[in-house]
Length: 319
Image 1 (cartoon, one colour):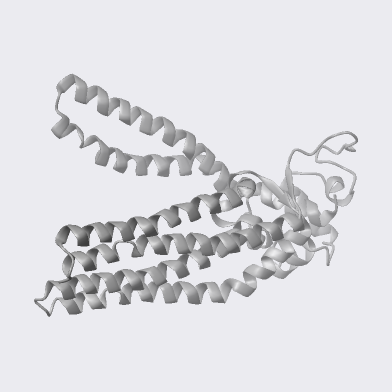
Image 2 (tube, rainbow, N blue to C red; image 1 turned 90 degrees about the vertical axis):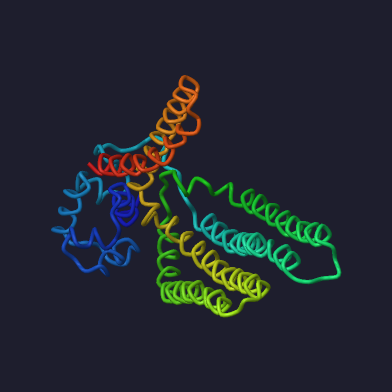
């Protein structure tokens, strides 16, 4: 393994970003990029500093055929999963496609009740039952393909599920490619977030304007227009967010850093135990006392305490 690959691997093991490592070594951010892209070799002082930070020997960093213990790895198999450039490109391609499918499915779900609302509120040649029946038919007709799109998208991205919660080592070309795409997309990502947020806020205007009319149909129509505008906003959010999250997954940054993955796995186990215990407490109290009309209070209280549990888990894992 080359020096550049070792720096990337050890940095990710520590859960540091390139900017954080640059601050620890006291070098510009650009230097870390050059080291990890094998464009420049760190000087002796920097090599020593890196070995201290990573907790490895300088021999391990400088000699390609040495492992972390200072021994030559002869028949040792690396258990860390490798992500090649081909895999990364395939992942980004399928995520770009499925982002559109998921966005379309969500749009169908948001728009699905509009027909029912308009038919139920307006004066039509249809009877009330016919209007409701046709509205429900339109609703189911939109929700059904939406569910199909969600399932199909999930099946397509399933082979890459390990990127969400497993530790892996990306090839040098993968990191370089993902960093370049992230840098190029950053400004567009911000603009799209601003646009979708503004659309969400503006969608309430038709509803406010409908308050000036006593006609109930105008109020229903305003809600329908609100849903249409929210749909456009959510579609932008989804497509924009999925592309950005995909790059973060490859770079193991943000919510997908090794620290965050470890925290997530611990939290998942704690959450399972917590909610099972809470369910057991709820059922036990309810059956023993028969106070079903009061025992539901367990759930909102449990939800509040779950937030405390999450905070404690995050604090404990950080230590």
